[in-house]
Length: 216
Image (cartoon, rainbow, N blue to C red):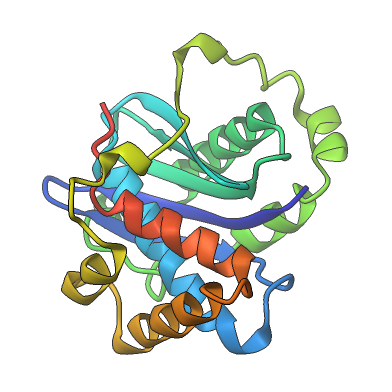
């Protein structure tokens, strides 16, 4: 079981603004971590942008799950985990982080804030502590009484691709990805054709499918 990223964002009228994020990419190759982090940031922002206020959702693709919670005050959080990690614990973590963040950071700063300007330093410790869901769940099970019937689960995103659409084309058209990440995708895509880099390719595939995802 693994948590890969934990992000706090502000849902604006047209786009999501990243306020703070923490990552654990130690299971990936050192040389690929920068691009993978960019894809995770890209994915987290897109999910928040397409989520309604007051909603919780989980988006599944292959062995990964993205859990999102957007509060009615436009503050949102995203956890990216493997499929074995308990969803309930992820939403408990998001509740805890967003509540703590809203108490420590003035809401006036949310719309224009950035990771460099927001003074909130607890994400890394939360991400590290919650790597063990059993320990974390034991400490916070009182807060974990969520109504899971209200959590939307998207089981697949394959059907969202229109006939004739290709992921390669979506990469090249995207304004959210830098040249390094686009080149990384092309390299991984080529390697994937030979059966290698499967773990990384699955996450990139999920990120790009989220580019056209519309959560309701």
